[in-house]
Length: 228
Image 1 (cartoon, one colour):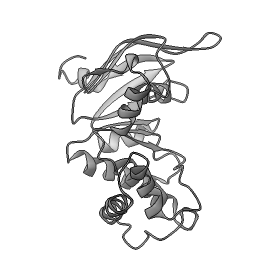
Image 2 (image 1 turned 180 degrees about the horizontal axis):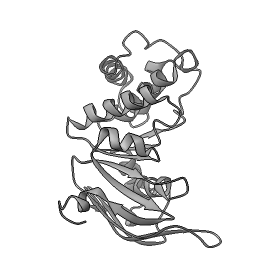
Image 3 (image 1 turned 90 degrees about the vertical axis):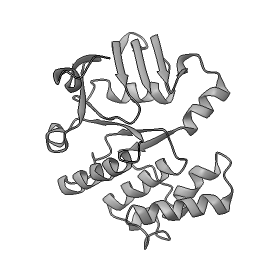
């Protein structure tokens, strides 16, 4: 599903955000990307989404070398990836339903089908009575559920989440991760960046550790399950 071969990213003038990363994530895996602030987690996610380009190395996502994609190829890649952010990034003047449906409409889904899919996802995520609510009237946990629904509305093959529990209390953070686990059970590949070591211990699953832009550990390798 995702293969990184000797990937490095250097920001001008000479800041090394990632250095010589080799990593393999199989289809259907659930992986935590862990490490302190500044470790390179967000940069790695941006490279997978092609928001940023590698300085060196190659990245394969679902069989395509995304470092070589043109504008149309990048647009197609992004339709296949769902993004969840720490800040939610919901449009405050739109309802929960409209926020989710918009993500489908912008890739060409009809308004009727977009709203149908949005309503179904909000109901699945426990927000069936909140579809007409605007983001600022929702709790932090509810806003994050809307953001997750938005990430799923185009049936992505890969979901990337950047510190999705960073603005939530401990109980809501764990509940949010449980939602991702439920999504994972349907076969979606999920990569979650987090600096919350306690969360990793409570939830389990594979964890890849970054520090100062370098890959410092991989619990999959520690368990003897193979190598990237």
